[in-house]
Image 1 (cartoon, rainbow, N blue to C red):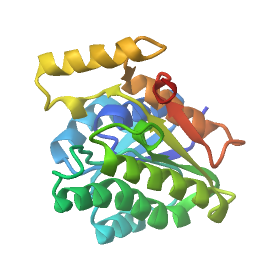
Image 2: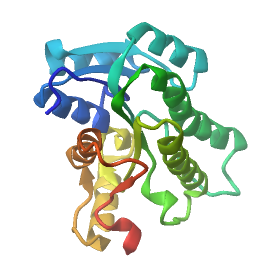
Image 3: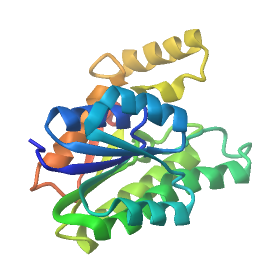
Image 4: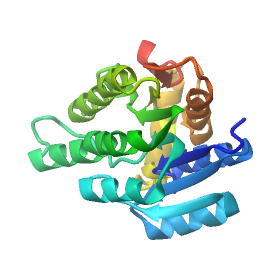
Length: 237
């Protein structure tokens, strides 16, 4: 249980982060959610109720991240699920797009860990987000795979440097979340069906599946430096 514990979830306004926030509150904890979208934050706050507070934050802005943690003070656990992701052919992807992906997913998590760690309880934890393409190479995912691998290595190294704070990494597979909402519905459904047919579990993942992994890492005090694969067996096919 998470009674009297405060969990900061950057990316907590939608998808996996919002589902993790709901599960934290269900277990008696309080959440501080942060994201770039004021509208999404307000909608999330209405769903989460009185045990949640919300802050706008762009994780690619180092000074914003530093100021955010100075404002919120001490807490118990940090989860960083916020990131802009993209893919495409290596030779045809603009360098600026590749840099933006690093700024968002790698440097955003780096800043959060750097400025959040001093405020975390010694019995607390940090959970970062990698992804299956760090462990299973896929055409069109050269940059994202490199970013995810960098996040995983960062987290495992921080498990040593920031001890006794525990640091772990979630590596999701193909998850059905609002982040894929930009795809046409038919194309999205066809994509999910194609992936599901290849996976041992015969379906794609949900935000709830991934959030359950986050809650496991938050609550198990004997787990650190671990990459938790929530991918339906994707990396082994």
